[in-house]
Length: 221
Image (tube, rainbow, N blue to C red):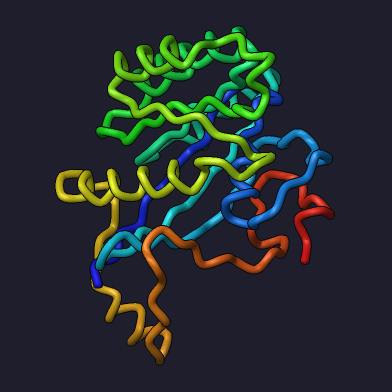
């Protein structure tokens, strides 16, 4: 089995639900009491796509303006980016354009970019239309998807789509490590059980999974 390793950074304004999206996908849980991210949090997950596996390093960055200057150290050498905004907030959508400019200026390698409109469960408060967001995504060469961390809607689709695109990109991108899973088996002493397409292998929740961030009590088993 082919295995690639890639780094994905999650960017967007404070309060749009970046951490909730990541925790919902990797931890299969949702909490309304997740504190704002300090600096960035680091997670890992494995996604099986057909007969290949993508090992993702997920960097969930802080949305607060006081941490903005730290962002380049987190998206440096990133292979993919999730640009997240809140569909009920025009300002969070407009802020995405600033993140795009930063990525274009600071990341030289080709990236997989996805625009994510979160909180689609709040349709009655929608301030950004699907057509407007979809059109902007197309203009920057990104895919657009609307999600709900609360209802676990379309989140797996976003990560699976990103992993699939990363596999295609790995043929030309030199920053992604690619190898055969037999290498892992020889190192670990035994083969690992294969997964169904699009499912993740959950990491253990411990302090080693968090870098430059706070370990939330509601994230612990």
